[in-house]
Length: 390
Image 1 (spheres, rainbow, N blue to C red):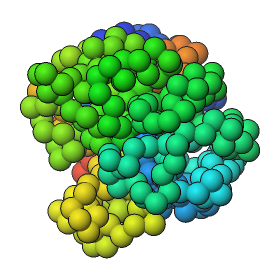
Image 2: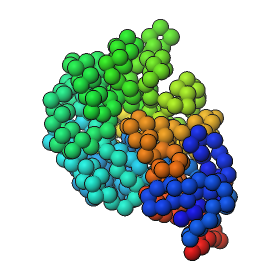
Image 3: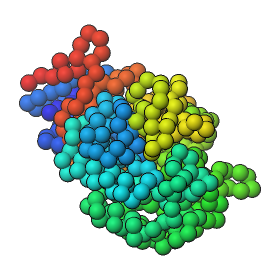
Image 4: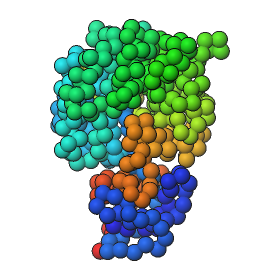
């Protein structure tokens, strides 16, 4: 298939005018005036690399911790309609049995992909977190880092874990970080660590920070905390929830400026109520109340979000973050965080044909996953696929 007449983000994330030829699930040519047997005219559109969400618990009434293939498949079907082409279903704090069941469902969806967004692997958030910064994680299921338990879970799901979270001040943290980092990305999360402890943990092998600012020690001019350590560590990437609720727009602008183009990662951290109307929901066995798009526990604690990556890109541009960085942060940067940037995350010959196509107003027009048009949202009067010529 030839995608013609659109602008696109090239491999350096500069916006250029070019055509794309796909064959099977791959990009085979990028150039000008390409011709082929099947042409899709995307005049007036902008082609982004497919969006990659590496921290998402649930959406559309489904949650990773349901522990079923059906729930993850429902997430995949919903996400592709929001422009997301790949994602990491994310677990919660719970028993080893609960986590293992969820990880097995993730592995099943990796081996036998459901329709919609591709499952890249699991993000294991909990149970090795701090009681003092547990946020919406279950306090009664938190425990000290246990590498033997992690290894059993990792091998039990066939190596499906791509990210594992830990509060680096916990007992056994050094051994866990040093050893687990040989298997997957290790992320600082839900932590009471001060600046020095955080910096030490980066030397042990942490290269990622989960939802920066949220559930961690903040930045103070005399106590830099975990946030200050992340800003000060050039090899650590940081997730940011960009719904304008979890982090103030002014702080987002500052964070993106300090992190630079390669270290900022946009995540949704969404829960099962994403895409549903206000009302009562659930996260990790706890009742959540959704009102005006904000998900909270009964005590007012934020319990994940109800946003999605494309809405977050729109927010960031509105908040004053450059479009180039916003797009990078939802595509190549999350892919790099889990070691998949050679396969997805940018538009380059040889990479997977995953695209999120928007119009001039940044409305979603078309989504292609693995070389197949998976979703189309035609504007009034015509259909993009209606301009598909044999």
